[in-house]
Structure formats: structure tokens, C-alpha cells
Length: 77
Image (cartoon, rainbow, N blue to C red; front, side, top):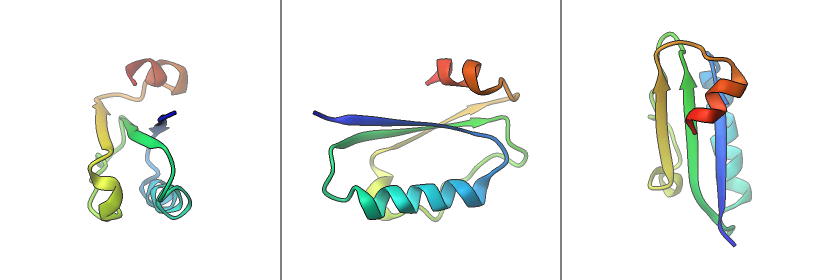
């Protein structure tokens, strides 16, 4: 069974980097198919520059122009 990880985040780039590093460290051999990240109107917008290389092909960054809140943000994923 493959797993999709969905993350909604707003103005927390450091925490997002820590989360992605933790996913990488704990699920290297796991069934992660994709990691969907919603940048929920962050200022400045997120840049996925320091992502572990092993995750880069699984990441998809979606940007919202405004903070929609968590429930509405999840609907974009």
C-alpha cells in the first residue's frame, strides 16, 4: 500500500524543513508515494531548496495566494 502525505502550512518554513527531514529519516524504505505541500499564502512564498534529494521527486508544492485556513486548504490537496 502506498501512502500520500498531505501538509498544509503557513509562514513556517523552518518547521516545514524539519518535518521533511524527519519524513526522510524515518520513511526511507517506507511506502511514501507522494508528499503534497500547500503553501497557504505564506509571505514570502516557500522555496523548497534544502529538501533531501531522496524526497525531491516525491514532492509537489501547491501555492495559494491567500491563507484559506486549514480545512479549505486541505480541499486544494
